[in-house]
Amino acid sequence: MSRRFEHLAAAALCTGLAVWGAAAQAPAQPTSRNPHGTMSGDCGTCHTPEGWSPLRNPLAFDHRGTGFPLDAAHAQASCRDCHASLVFSQVGTACADCHRDAHDGELGTQCGSCHTPESWTNRQEFYRIHNRTRFPLLAAHARLDCESCHRGQQPQQFVGTPTECVACHLPDYLATTDPDHQRLRLSRECQQCHSVGSSTWAGGAFGGSFPHPATFPLRGAHATLACASCHASGFTGTQAQCATCHRDDFDRTREPDHRAGGFSTQCQSCHNDQAWQPATFDHRLSGFPLDGAHARTGCDNCHANGRFSGTPSDCVSCHRDDFDRTSSPNHRSAGFPTGCQACHGTNGWRPATFDHSRFFPLTRDHEGIPCATCHTNPGNFRAFQCLSCHGRERMDDKHEKVGGYRYENNACYACHPRGVE
Image (tube, rainbow, N blue to C red):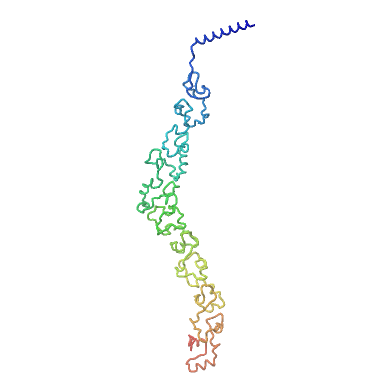
């Protein structure tokens, strides 16, 4: 057994030496060093069996696996644009690693705050970022290129740009002649009169700080109007009279009809600048002050059919029916004067007082006598009775030496119109 084993061992040794000798005499195969550093994966992902270059097209390498997906413009870049060294693991992923900061650090290092992989000029995002500053881009400002306002600075550097309107709009201010801003020394704070939310200079209402002339202060309803409501044809020479703007309001008013009634076009006579209603009219200006019950009466009660100009002011023009239907006493049959103010006041028909001295002074013995004592016919106050108190015997004795004496009522009054002897 041992001899057989020794024989086999010797045979194996000889075979091994032969193989080693053949290997030692064969030429060595060249070996390739991996230029990408520590990198796992199949070389065939990028290379072909024909050679290391050109690379496979398209590459089968999924860049998302690195944590930096190639989107938009990045997908159009060649590998060597970012990988200057073939050791791929040594490439940074921050924007500044590849892109020079055109803003010189003044806007921070987070380029993605304004830019996207699609383009450097993502305008929509610029506006959103700009609106977080103290100068949001609204209306006409939102349509401008950045360079329209950011002038006279290093390219792409924006810090320090003034936000005052006049910094950009001084030529507009100086060129405006209606009204002449420079001559009138209007404020250069444009937002005092113009709205930043408007697309034009004329758009938007006043901001409330415009120094409107003291001759026409903007109060009440006037303060809420857009400038063009009154200044449709410009600002210079605008009339301050109410009718300049409100002639149509005047003409179409029917309750009362201002035009037919001959009303004054000086609206402030009745109205204020808060609203058309409520309205007040100083009736004293007409020569007929509204006192008592007249002050509580609607205009149409006296000014029928909307007629105001030429309305008569005598009592009977309105109160003829009251005069005619009064029976205690009967004014009409008694021949009372139609000047109601002779007995009545404006607070009411009662109490009424009658100035008897106009006809027959009630003095001495006549004072305090009830009306019915002399006016025995309540339907006729023109008739009076003297003889019911002044008896004939006594009157005859007193008038014994009076020529033409007659014991009659009218004769008494003819001789004694003032009620005295």
